[in-house]
Image (cartoon, rainbow, N blue to C red; front, side, top):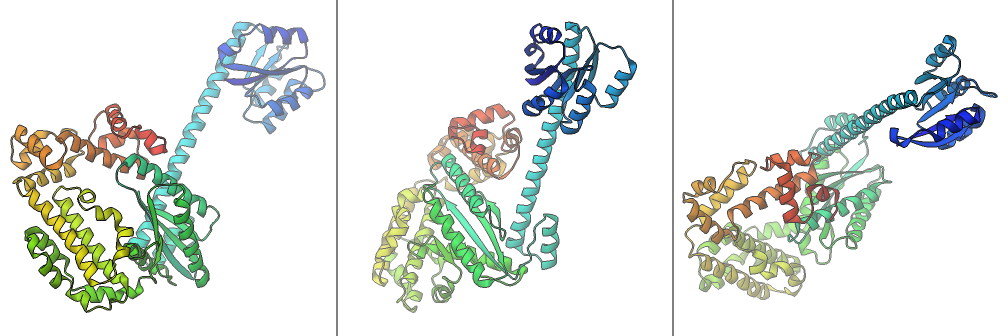
Length: 532
């Protein structure tokens, strides 16, 4: 509905026009009136109508004078001149002022209707053009933001020369010149049980980071993936940059605890004096995050914190992960103690005064056993509940014997699970079928017959075996894979729902939305917007 203002010095004519015309039928709201241009001007400035209908001949300020002022002050207003004088000079001047329409008295309802319909169509067209322009500008802005994130991501992950970095940064209107640089990596981990909830929590973390950075001129951010944000900190004072990194990381991790149920941790790389060393700082931050599990109660770990762990790396490199994998595949429970005695020899040669070495060995072995169970299509967290208690569990590890005792339990559980799975002769075939599905989920025609052919089974036989081995029906597993990829695309791209539907194997975007809501409880649009 567009607002309309009427100006006419003859009260009888003004009343007749106002009362005897159905404004709303033609898409207008009658918003005010005045007897002359002088009185009208202040009211128009207050009401801000879309259309002004004015008599041309009035006392104090006539319609042409008013039109001239309105075109300067409110150029978007459409003006319709009503005149009782069939005078070419008036019409010519009105046209030169940019008046939209010019009609003669006495005003016929049919003529006013036709004129207002023309003006409404003109306003609709302009409104659509403005909306299209705003949409285009937003698309350009979003695309620029994506390109900017990609540039920053490539800079820290793959490295570039200083000249390349500075030149590209200028193109994105960023000034990366400073004396010192450091990188923070912020990582979010959910419980893995509810992807919709986890997505909403990533939105909260993203909003928190943006709020904390809103007034900062020396911190840039980019997303590495849905659950990881990279922050680049630059300053001319080395002490100041280290303070900024520590305070910012602690603010993010501490404030996130009140917002989400998942875990947010941060790793801080060393400070460097060259742009080309951003990659090194990023790698240090990632390494700090990888070691953070051995620092009990710490959400923020710096590269300096783990510098002494080079002793761990050199002292423990004899603990061969490959040997552990082979043992889990073929050994019996009776051989665990002998294996551990040999497996842990390098640890005995290391300074055990630091509990960090024991925790490091225990957690690495526990996670390796968990991966082994997952490879056998088991649920590691259910079979090895120690994984869920890693943070609290390791505080009870004090010496070599307590470590050996704890690892004996872990290896025994993994081997017994392997033995329980040995009745199946079909793990390899089902694994091949899963891999085929994971590689071809985007094909709308992907069928049970295709997967059965890869596994070299009949459809009926394959359907039974696949459910038995994976815990999912074929269609359930395919849907799980497709919706997982769709969730990632909804979070990390600006693609439309219809495009994402096609990309993950659904020809019908409405059916895709139906399946997405059925599984996740919310529509793809609500998922993207954080509604649920």
